[in-house]
Structures are given as structure tokens and as C-alpha cells.
Length: 183
Image 1 (tube, rainbow, N blue to C red):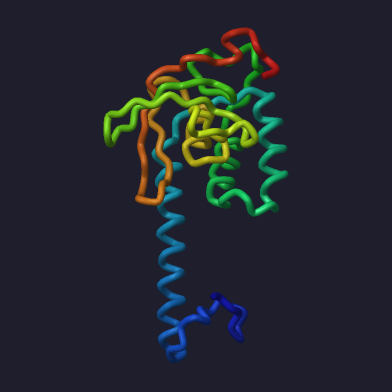
Image 2: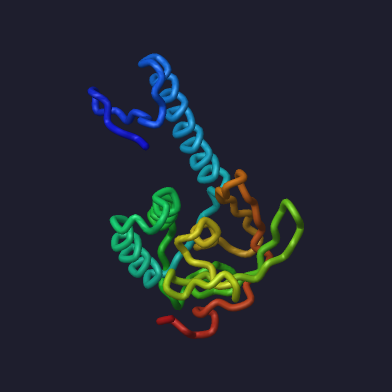
């Protein structure tokens, strides 16, 4: 349980040690938070490829990010990462995006670089997510990492055990490459 101390900083109320001990716990929490921020920064630096998204995906995803950021149903770091990726992406019309870029509703084959195992996933909006059939939400760490990258890109994202790296091997289906511009 965390409560506010006299100075408005969080204090762990499950810990009943001295004030000095509580400061040690607070320091450890700050260090953990800093390390987590450094990991996210390293991921962003590693994934510095130019990314492209369609104008339609941009509009829809901006609306999605804005609508869920106050719901607390999505981890804020995932939402923040997706928001940053959307901001830095080059926006192109649906008719002009190259067929080797991952757009919403694209089906892609990725290779887990730790295990060498291939996986086929479809990048979808949250309401259509179903991991059992390979539908990955754009709000998930993998989904946010895939958006806008192209065949051959190495993507990285945070998982509970550290950083996961995958290569986008090929795009099996991209709506825009099939003349489906409003999917």
C-alpha cells in the first residue's frame, strides 16, 4: 500500500521501519523507475528506422490513444510508446504506402531472434485482439513495436523478463497493397 507522506511523496505504508529506512525504499523505487525509463529510451534509440503509417491509421490511432489514456485499462508505458511512434512516423496516403510496411490489419511473419521461432500475427485494433488466433492489439508491446516498420526491420519491445527482439521476415497481407484503403 502506498500513501502520501508529509512532503506529498509516496510512502510505502506496508513498511513500518524508521524514516531513514522509508527513504531507502523510496530511493529504490526511484532507481527502478529511472531504469525502466532508460530501457524504454534504449528501445526507442534501437528502433530508429524511419517508419511510415497511413493518414487513416494516424487519425484512427490518435483517436484511440486519446480515448484510452484515461481509462487505465492499458499500461501507460505501452500507450506512451505507441504515442511516440505515431508522432515520429512519416504519414503517407493509403494509396502511396509501400507494400513492405506494416499497417493496421496487416498480417506479418516475425522471427523471435532469441529462439529463432517464426510467428504469424495480424496487427489489429483492441476490440479485435485475440492472441489465440494471432490477432495482436496495436496497444500491446509487440503491436506498438510492429506498426510502421518494414520487412527486414528488427523491432524491440519490453516484456516482463526484459527486452524482446524480433525481425519482420515478411508481410503476408497488407490491406493497402490489395486496394483496401478503408479497412
